[in-house]
Length: 289
Image (tube, rainbow, N blue to C red; front, side):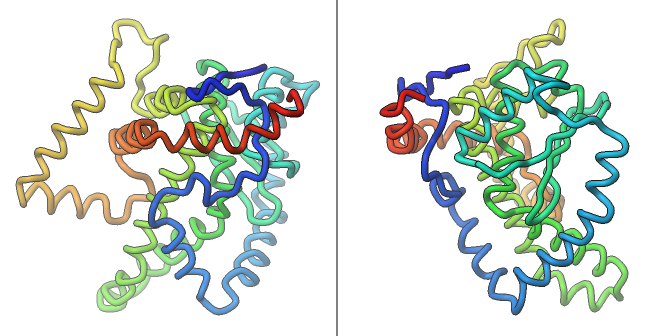
């Protein structure tokens, strides 16, 4: 399978791609601050490595089916293409969970794996599936998984403390949630790289809003959703609306879907995607990949 990105460059493999090449502005600063916590990497990797190997991975192996070249060749090939475009050589198990919800998730620290719901596999185009898988691979490549777990764990602990303790702890938690939302924007960019273009990524994000060309009588365009973003930004000029929306978003792990569409469109129009692919695909094209 070959895909021509917006650069006009066909690429099946990017070389020497780093998370910083597509990272959302501000995410690296937040991550560097968190990594200054003493023994962060060692403790978190060992702890979550134990949790994954003793609980979550066995659960996936026991209840879902793993994608292999034999069991599900088409999805396997798409997954391998997504990995190659993101310059990932690591063996990452992919499992399909029979489920009607549209969802996917990456788990683990040093030994990650991905679970994707069967609804995506059944209803997505190849480009949309590349985006979804690329998004989860972006979390793995960007070393997001341990940080996300840490935020969730701290939130649970705060919920069990007194109101005074929760108020004090919120000074740490709220910036961490902001960091988590930045991770999603970065992972969306990784999804765009895997999918071949920001336009394909925009189609993938629209799935999260329930917009799909297989749904009868639904005709929502990217322009419609960008207009919605403008409208909701206008509403935020009202101080009360801004306060209420901000409070609702404070402890959300994901940005609003229309914000994700806006940020992807902005990245597309910036020309950064084209420059990145032109640089990282050159060696691939020289080899004829």
